[in-house]
Length: 80
Image (cartoon, rainbow, N blue to C red; front, top):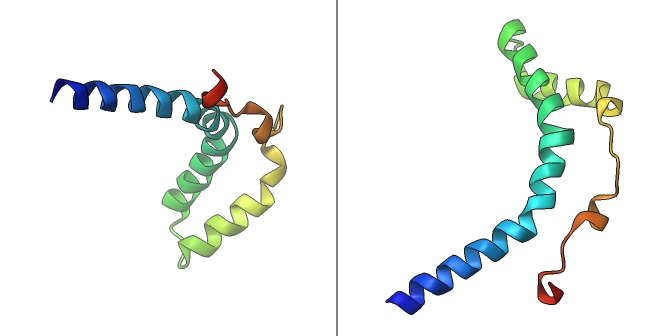
């Protein structure tokens, strides 16, 4: 049982390490624009909210400031 818990802890730590760049990328680039689009939907209450959100995201696609390529942020956990 203890070995199983230790293995789960190791796997969780590995997953946290690998997913950190992706989570940071989403937090920096996607979440702010998506949140504003959702706020706009909540205030305007359009008849087709999905289409409205799609249009909002398309109109604001250049608001995303990507500093690095996502692929360069991934960590190679097998070599670290």
